[in-house]
Image 1 (tube, rainbow, N blue to C red):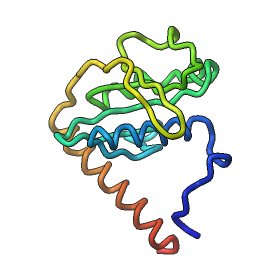
Image 2: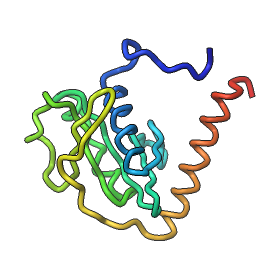
Image 3: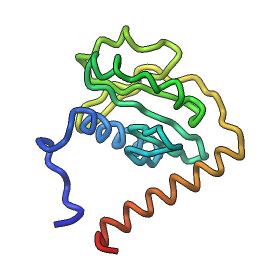
Image 4: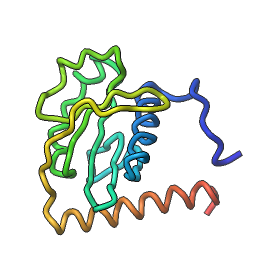
Length: 149
């Protein structure tokens, strides 16, 4: 049935982290979309929109190799007010840049370890990005309700 919860066994490790992060962000009154494309060639794991319009990006890394293979993360900084890494408790966090935020997560929950510094987006980009996030979320909802539309 369309819209069913995906069993844990079918989720990739990064998707499990993203789910835990999304649940945590919702508790903070943020809404989020996973695998969002802010511009061609970039795909962020979690894009979150806060109650006052703040935009966060959370990149989920399931292993050292996953992190070391990610050379694009610097390009994500221009698309958010705060940038975070989400990793599980076994991840070697000393690899992660200190000037970024850190969230420990699993499939079901997460906790903030280090708040990311604030680097406010320009107003025009924030407005455009907020509309794109809303449209993206609405299209996903529509596809769940009617996958053949």
